[in-house]
Image 1: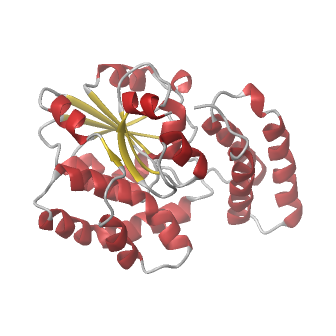
Image 2: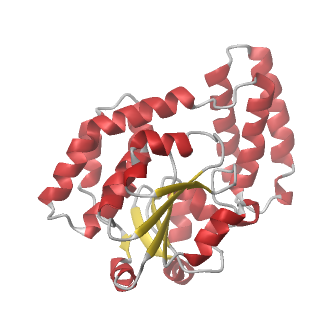
Length: 287
């Protein structure tokens, strides 16, 4: 997906947040912002937003010496999600272990960030969000493909969300499941250790994309990941960053996300904060 001007101030705001997580020195925060603005001013040389984000957050790491600025945030996210896990299981059981609602649980995990940052009642927020149906749901296409599938690849998003994904993975236990995470810490996205902490290894082989951007930019990914990517019978790409990186890739896959920004919502032809489970071919038709 091309880079939109509306994305630029959002990236800068995020870097400021990251800088404040790791240092309280105003002069260092200023330097981080100045260097980030230099990268942002040259945005036309990048193909995808996640590439710019990666470069900007590397500035934070290099200037502060902190390799994982969101480490404590991710630990808090995973801990909160684990506390909510029984609610997720109960919800799925109440809905007859439906594949539709298992997918919806996985998509709902994307709200855990805002639920924590705004000091909301997490359990109440999750229960409210779980009840919302998908605005777009290509589940019939998915059901047809899964009847003959053997290998499924899920490309993860944020750390807390991995606990919600565990519920979804349990419904695919008859398949060969691979779950891909970021190669190194970037924002609050899941790394190998985060996935292990969430217990995803109970259901899937955990691998890295080999890419340190907050989205699977294919020309930056490892051979190991690309082999799995091309050999998988089904791919589920989670979150907005992966959507930005993969919406124009050359193979079929499903995007599972909440449209949390106007740019993504407009691209998918849905309203802000709508939930979507969409096949890439449908994206092309709606764009």
